[in-house]
Amino acid sequence: MIRIAIQSKGRLSEESLALLAEIGIKIDDSRRKFLAQTPDFPLELLYMRDDDIPQVVAAGTADLGIVGLNEVEERGFPLQVVRKLGFGACRISLAIPKAVEYDGLAWFEGKRIATSYPGILKKYLADNKINAKVEVITGSVEIAPAAGIADAIFDIVSSGGTLVSNGLKEVEKVFFSEAVLVSAGPLADEKQALLDEILFRLDSAVVSRKKKYLLMNIPESSLDEAVRILPAMRSPTLMPLTAKGWYSMHSVVEESQLWDKIRQLKAIGAEGILVLNIDKIIP
Ligand code: PRT
Ligand code: ZN
Image 1 (tube, rainbow, N blue to C red):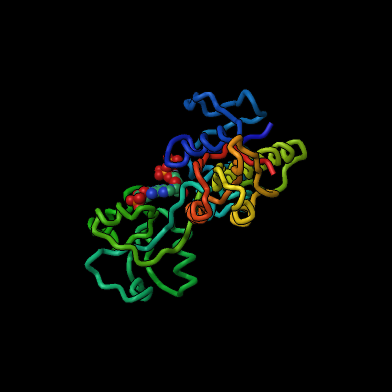
Image 2 (image 1 turned 120 degrees about the horizontal axis):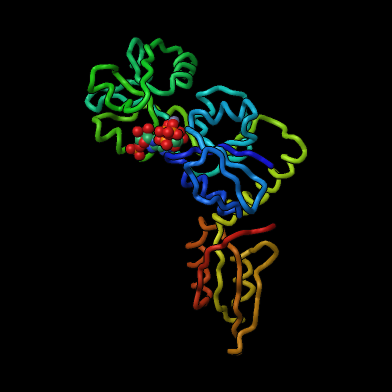
C-alpha cells in the first residue's frame, strides 16, 4: 500500500484526481473522507490543505504528495521532486501599483512588500542584496497596496487578470511553479515497486498527451516522400487500399509539429487526413 497526499479542495484537486484517473486509479468521490482507498490499485489518498502536504510527506505520514512547487519551496522540507506534472502552472512575481514608475530591483530598497510566500521572497531579496520589509498576509494579498498595508506585493500570477483588476503591474517574475509529485527520498521495496508502476503509467500518459495519431490516404508515387515527412516510433504503418495506387498511412506525430506536417503531406497529395487523440503510448 502506498499513500499519497493531494489537495482536498482548490485549484489542484480536480486535476490531481483527473491525473490519477488517467493512469487507471479511480477514486470514488467520497471527498469528505480524510483518507480514501482506491478499489483498483493499492493506494490510499490523504486529502488535505496544500500548505500541509510538504510536511506530511517529509514526516512520512504520506509516501508521496501532489502539490505546487511553490509550496514545496516555501515550506523548505527536504523533498525530492519525482515528476513535474504539467498542470497548475503559475509564477510568483513582484508587482507594484500601475502608475508608479519602475526602474529595476533597486526600487524595492526600503519598501514594504506583502506576501504569503515570505520564505521565497526573503531569499530572493537577500540574493539580490535588497533590504525591504516583508509583511506576511494570508489571502487577498493583491489588495495590500490599495489598503495602505504595503508598497508592493509578491504573489502568485497565472493569467495576470487579478493584478490588472487591482491596478497593479508585474515587474519581476521570481519563481516558476507547476504541480509536482514529491517524495521524501527512497521508499521501502514494496512501496518503491508501486511508485515505479505509477511512474510508468504517468510517463505513458504524459508522452501521449503531446502526440497525435495521424491517418491518411497517400498515392503510391508519394510514399517515399511521406515516410521522410512522418518518422514514427519505428516507421509509419502502410496498408494498401482497394483503390489501386493508393495506401493508407498511419503515424504518430508531435502535436507541436502537427500543422506543419499536415501542410507538407497535403502538398504531396495526401487525402482524407484524420487526426486522433492518443490515450496511452507504451514504448
Ligand atoms: O485551501 P488550500 O490551502 O488547500 O488552497 P489555497 O487557497 O492555498 O491554494 P489554491 O487552491 O488557490 O492554489 C493551489 C496551488 O495552485 C497554488 O499553490 C499554486 O501552485 C497553484 N496555482 C496555479 C495558483 C494559481 N495558479 C493562481 N492563479 N494558485 C493561486 N492562484 C491565485 C493567486 O493567488 C491570485 O490570487 O489566483 C490569483 C491570480 O490569478 P490570475 O489568473 O488572475 O493571474
Ligand atoms: Zn494553501
